[in-house]
Image (cartoon, rainbow, N blue to C red):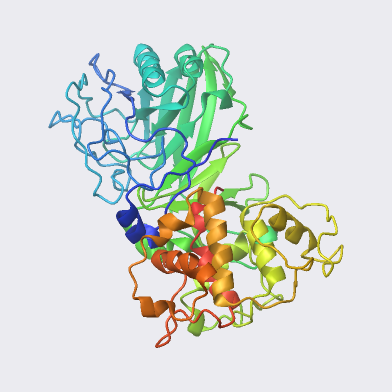
Length: 511
C-alpha cells in the first residue's frame, strides 16, 4: 500500500497557522518538485521542454500532499501570450489549482521552458499532451539525486481552454525510467491530479502509455448502491472517467487497471461547488458500478490546500464527489451543527445509528460504543478475544473491538474489568479522542496542547490527567465549552459529542 498523507481539513486551518508544519505520514516530498511541461498536440514548436526544479520560497506547506501539492511551480502550463511560467491558464470550467490562492510561487531562476502554444482540440473536445522522453528521464534522475527514494515528478497537462478530455502520453521506456529511479509521477489535468507509483503499472518498455481524464456529463439522479440505500446523494463535482492504456503501433490494450499499488487521485472543487457543498465533512468520493450503474462509496478526504477531495483507488473508472446526507428522524435542527459529521461517520460505518431511523444523539456514550468507534476509525482488525476482562463476554457486538483497542493502547480497563456499559464523561471521551489523534498522526498531545489559547477558567474542574487532552481538543475545535460553565468535564458525553469530535478527525484518516 502507498504511504498516505494525513490531511488537515478546513476546521483545523487556525491550528495549522499556529503550528506551521505538522509532520505526518507524507507520501514523500515536502518542498521541491521536478517538473515536466508536456508538449501539446498540434504545437509546431520543438519547445515544451523540461521545466526547471524550483523551490517553494515558503518551504513545506502544512496540510499539503506530496505529489498532490501546490509546492513548486504552478500546475498550469506556461501562458503563451505572457511567456511567463507562473501565469495560470484557464481550465475546463474550473479554476486552475492554486490551493486557497495564498500559496506563493516564484518563477525558477533558470526555467528552461519554451512557452507552449494553444493546443489543438479534436472534434470531440480532446486535448492531447506528449511528454518528451528525455525530459521525463532527466527529471526522474533529478528527483532521485535530490530526494532519494520516493521522489515525485510533476507533469503539467492543464489545458488553456475548456476541454472534455485530457490525454497524456509517455514513451513506455521513459516511464520505466521513473521506476528505475524509484520515483513517482503526478499528472495535473486541471480538473484532477493523478499520482501514479511506477510499480503500479507494468509496461515492459513497449509502446506508449496513455493516461486520460474525461469529463462525463450526466444529469440523472445518482443511485446509491444497496449498502448505502438509506443515504441521499447530491453530485457536487464533475464526473471524471480516468483511464490508462498501452498503445503499441496500431494495437491498443488496456493496462492492468487492478493496480499493484494504490493510485492517489485528487478531484478539484471550484468555489461554487464548495459553496454548494457547505460543510466539506459531508463530502465523499463515489465510483460508478459499471454493471448496475449505481454509485459505490469509496471514501475520500478534503484537502483545503489543494481545494480537492483526495482518495486512493486500486483501479480507474468513473468517479465523482457527492454530498452525503442521512436523515435520521431524531437528529433535529437542534443538532444541525453535528449533522454533517453524523452522515460522514455513518456512511463509513464508523458510527452507525441505534435503529433503522434513529441515531439517539443525546444518549450518553458508553465505553463499549467508544471502543467500537475507535476501532472502526483506525480500521483495526478484529482480534480473537483472549478473555482479558472479566466483564466482557465472548461473542458480543463489542467484544473484538474492545480487544483490538486495548491491544492498541487506546483504552484500558481497571482491576481486570472493562465496564462496557459504563458511561463516559466529557473529559474521558476527550482523552480517548486525542489518543486517536496521536495514533493517526504520530504527533504528540503536548504539541497540540501548547496551542491552547483559552482562559484558564474554561478548564474548570478538569482532572490533572485530562488537562492536556482537553486543551488540545479545545484548540482543535473538536469540542466546545458549555455556556457559562466552561468545558464541564464531569458531564456525561453524548453520542453527538463523540460524532462531532471524531467527525472532525476524518481529514486525518487515510481512505
